[in-house]
Length: 395
Ligand SMILES: Cc1ncc(COP(=O)(O)O)c(C=O)c1O
Image: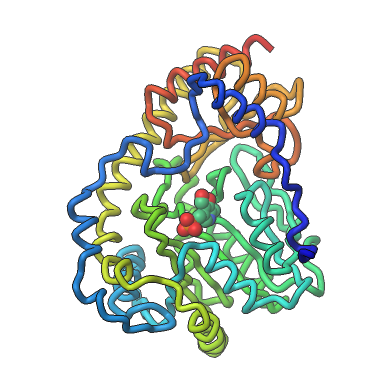
């Protein structure tokens, strides 16, 4: 009855089963996996956000496949602020309902069924499903960790085959927080040009750099101004303004002009077929993007508070190490691999009422990794990480 691409394992994994069991029993769980900023105690300018959604102009339907020009101009302004002196053409932008839709558009643009996209692991778990739905095969290569995350270009080249159409990167990566470096970007551009590949760069966490160690000077800026290879940057309001419920994202296309124009013409037809983004949110987009200064300041403070607390506790305990973090909303702990990550996460849940993500959710190369959300309200994070380290110390 159903297409093979939907033959996913539909039953819950052991960790999710344990979590549901505990929730049903009413036990108060300290959740260190939260990723929904709207329920993490941040202050939103509710009046301004709601007022922006009441624009009478939204009563008129004036469809534009790429999204309303006024909305795209606001997004172009966001990039203009990042690269002073550069000109970002709103014509290079396509607005979408979330990045998942943007990925679907790009996979349909670039890949025949069965074609491949090379992707760095560990990474965001949704990519497996997004690729399945579009009949794309993901070919992973593992990032290396050696005093910070690095790209393994030998492994990346090995992952490329005759069917590869694109390299997908998250900049900074979720959950490792690794930014692509300028020398890595140069190598990526060389590979893409040599092999006729596109670069797809997810920059949803780009604005959340963690205060820089010296090496961070080498962090690459936004790929939205990457002229050297055909490049598609994905981002949106879910992280930039902490407004995931608004469902606004975009694709910014850059690169050699003739390729970009051809890509945009094709993307415009895909977008025209869906015309998915609603008028009120497009009209509101300049205001919603304008929320970013206040939201990002609060989130950065939360991240720093939680990191400082975690580092202080780790220094006192010697039972785990925090991997170097350059950006994003997550911290990765290297923990003793005396049992599988999943067994450890279930032990933490059942014995200590603390919820953390096991590394294998993100395709870490082996056991011994836990992922903690730094968005977690500070009191919950403190008590949760205290219990977590107590548990690790007792292993
Ligand atoms: C790397 C990455 N890309 C995209 C998204 C989702 O973005 P959106 O809500 O705009 O679709 C997430 C959500 O956590 C993410 O981690």
